Image 1: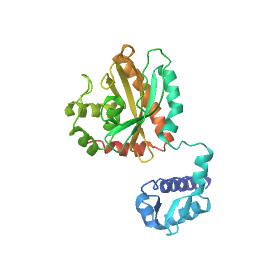
Image 2: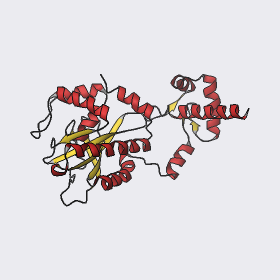
Image 3: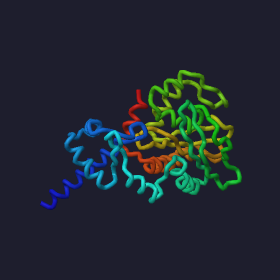
Length: 270
């Protein structure tokens, strides 16, 4: 009997979490029918769960008799220091990446346009090192490892829009052949990180891995970069093995789950 009660309690928690996951920036408030369709639960089950969640502050009722995230969720996020932005989530991880790799680590944000932007960095302690200077300046996709990884994990339609447009040759090693890039994107998705060797900045090699948000969409990436003299192909793969789990750690801080990420990645595949 006790085991049956425990299983029922866990199921209720799972269902309550499924309801909470329905809310995001695009759908901040939902009705019972909306939640029923999104979760696959009956309307009576959703209604019963919402009553309990209302009592505990997990959900609140709006003036239109719809439902939204409740005050307890906001208080817990504030009290426990849950990072509110990509930069906030990334900075502690970047410091550890710099220490582990002894190279410069940075966080990049995917912009609504076909560009990315450097948000911040933690510089290598080497005298000869990579130093980002273009903070806040849009950088075209897919230039460099950060640009390639962001585009590789973007929806297929966005990849096509960029690859069929003008691809600027900024350095001799810059890849501008759309077929070569499309092949690289498939390899990046399979490997989990991108590599570049003096493709955007002369003498600099980089690796980068994607960061996802709660919806499973790529929103940015982490990178490790340094001078070509220290970046053999083998070393790039070693750094890739560091940056990929670090980027996923940031993703989890932003609310990502493996299920949501996998759904997002499917949109990147033709």
